[in-house]
Amino acid sequence: MLVETCLLCDRKRLGAFRLCRYHEIASDKIREAYTVWQEGYGDFSWRNYLKKVLSLPETGQWALDVAKLELSDLDGTEESGR
Image (cartoon, rainbow, N blue to C red; front, side):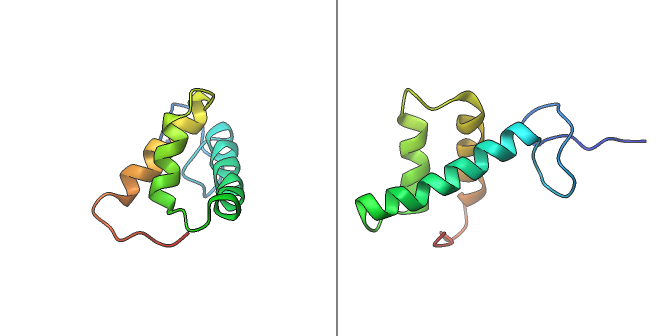
């Protein structure tokens, strides 16, 4: 039986999610923080926010992985206004 793995690592992914629990937690935290950033900085696009996340030295590895994946997903598509 083939076990499906996280898109970002070799860990088993969570049910129907694309990511393992660690990357899924990082994804949730990034999305939660985006709301706070929008309140603080006004109209801050999802793409610019992800680029900022990538540039911060305190960003952890799992969050870096997720931000890179999200930016990769945006390449070639319209911004979704998340």
